[in-house]
Image 1 (cartoon, rainbow, N blue to C red):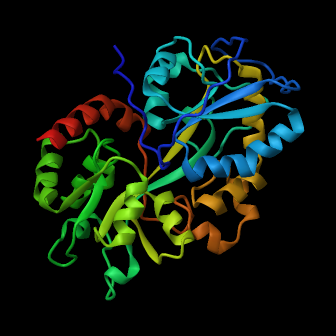
Image 2 (cartoon, one colour; image 1 turned 90 degrees about the vertical axis):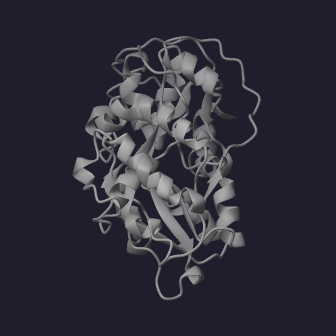
Length: 353
């Protein structure tokens, strides 16, 4: 039996849900030979976590897509119950919905296969390319306001745990497990290649060592508030949060060594109301020049390597999947999928303890 779905940890702040537009057509899982162009009018209901990243999707992609096709993209905030129902094969309002690598593996049988006419993201893991589009590469990393450590800050996860050398509180997730177990194991000396299957007992013991120095956040905007106010010295979270601080003029250092790089993706469930419109949007999202513009706004990496051709070396170097970041830890889709249910349960229990 598949575990109950919980929203993937994504680098986007929760926002108030917009009213969903009622959709009349229905879809089914399976391969479509060709994507029909989006008809004039109609909608695509796009479910993500709102915030500045959704604003960037609108500015870079959705406005132009609507202008060219007449199809409106209606953004809404993901409700876990709706997503769970659709990922289990049931009906729901969402056409495109954000998720993570583990969920694609767990719920693949309830997802539509993209038609051949939708370009695949060559930077996405091969096992998800037929199901996922609009992907952005996110780095789950530690960061700090540069002035906090004028002589140089942490360089790796062992340093994140070293409160004597790098004093101060640490902000970490207080709801989603993100990569907390993996970070703890790397800090304890486990090699990246040996992370899976996760040694939960060892990871929890390492987390226990740091608990007195942890501040738990439950919404992503809190990370920016905690760092900029000086309430914490270090924070662990999606790199887009730190890009937001940098864009506000806050000199912030992201530690790329040991950062976990994972694709956050959009998929189409078996009973998505408007699959043809969504296939057309998926094709639009594959445009490498537009992906480059999106990456420059958000510091999230593109799903197409061709996007690098439209970016400066400086802009590329800010991305999680920049070729220069050789010490990052690529997500292990199978390892994450196998550990998913226990990770959720164990982290929830650890937080309560």
